Length: 359
Image (tube, rainbow, N blue to C red; front, top):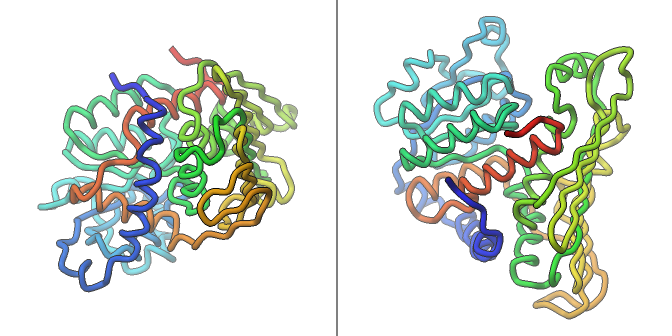
């Protein structure tokens, strides 16, 4: 089907970053002239659901048709970002005249079946993560998206971070030289109730949150030649949750190490993404911020030789940026920065890193 060409993929990163900046600076008058894209959301049970919807509402490119929530209890308790939003059935949504896109924010086990129904109805989709517990079903979805010439946007949270965009630019333009190491940490500490819920997924912490930095590692290095998973259960006497994991991604000339736990106190503060090349290092910690350390053996543009602290502009919101980018793709103003080959490589690596068998 589709293959991931790292050099060709990275070649467009700098242009993509510039495109995002240009899009962000468009005037309100210019945006107002564009016809809004009709969109709806199915599901409110995903951990990201309310945050995604809240930022979708702040994006001027869309007309929100309504929200679907099939669970009666969840529907009765909706508030916050969903206050005053029209609740409709899935059938009503997918049959709405002029509907172009659907945001899929169900609980994880329902993501792929829901996405499949949307794609079969001819909809472009924003699909939250992770994309199911097997590769076969996700491949089938990608094949159908490709066949119908639709747009699929995955909900990995660091794709449109301005700090990560800087990193991708530094790599693509050769500032860091040949990359030989990527190191990432994605951890937090969860409640007993969350432990019970997440125990249903064999992939544990790596599947739940480590997926976000695997996505970034593959954007930098491409598809690994080999992925080795290491997993530990801290409290096997209490539950079956795999809560302490390490994945090693092997490449011909590089190694990536990805750590993810669900037991680290103040884990958010130690989340990090580090890229080391022969001519420099990009070091972001904690993730989600817009200040990082940059080491350069040779000056590049406005950046001097040696270590320095760099602060880039904040994004308006990770999902605001994502939905703006999606609108530009749907309006054929730009190419998709994340081809289906990337999505396939990411999900296969997530599954291997999380200990799932991959056929």
